Image (cartoon, rainbow, N blue to C red; front, side, top):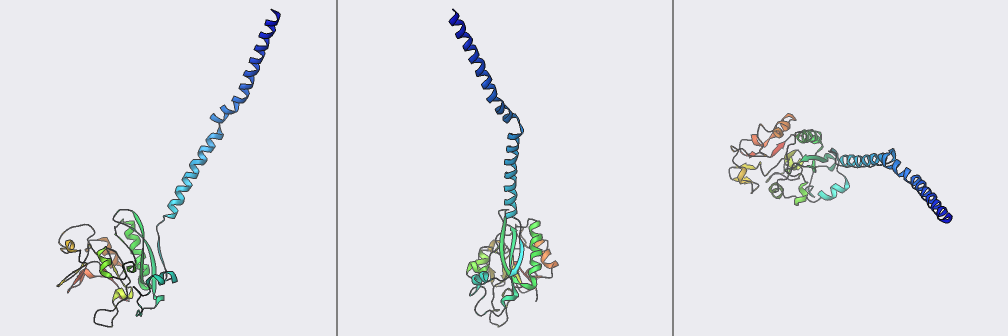
Length: 249
């Protein structure tokens, strides 16, 4: 009987000791679940996530920049838009990077080469167009189309510099000087008494119709170019070039 009592007492002692040990190890876990350490970790993770998102936004910041023609850019255009017979000094041209809103309503960064005389004008115009969410389908160097204006227009590519002489003359065209810009040319074709270009623009030849991306005197693009001293091909008498804005050097 005495042995049973001692055994029972030993079991009770061991049980109490076990409860004490359990309480000792459980306490820190309760503190971690309820305390500041876990909260701090969560806040830290959120902070890292926010920083990452901010970094992405910084990487995707809008850009409106002008710089001299670098060797890398010149390599891309030499023999194409900057033909071997080009008489425009390289230092008279500027390479622009321009953020614009595409037809997909998303932001894109385009490229354009122009004469240094109009570089700041274009940056200001395109920045205002961007702020108004004015849509431009594409903005690539015409060199991406092997210097083929027709192919560039068919793709509705907005562009500027492409050295050439006016047909049958030794006079350099305004595009050849980098002093003329074409905007959304598919929707705003060049029309003469003998036809129109680009060839896939037939749907947009009738300017009495209303349709998206049409440039007329009520259009913001028209208004901004005129404010900056450009003339519009849509105002010409003998032919109409609705995509075209130019400025005299």
